[in-house]
Image (cartoon, rainbow, N blue to C red; front, side):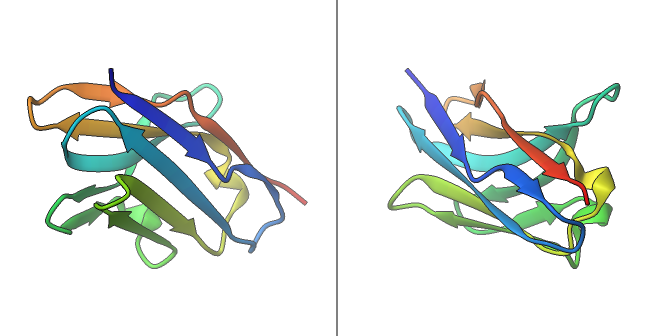
Length: 114
């Protein structure tokens, strides 16, 4: 049973920061990442990180967001700075385990508004 528990979402003003956490359990994970879904839009990749530490960030996230991973804790973090209203979305943690199985967290709401 794979379980992904997200935390850290909330309401923040434009230009502010949030740090999302995702605690993964139940398997050995080759990749952990974050997707987001804004109202009326399809889910989209934000960032992902492999067990070896290689990262991949979408262009809109580069320079503002940082993804990191603590393998000992099976936890992935997304540090989001300089937040914009268009960053408002539900953010989902996604895992890829050693058997190539994909799992999703329940999501955490991020709202950027003045």
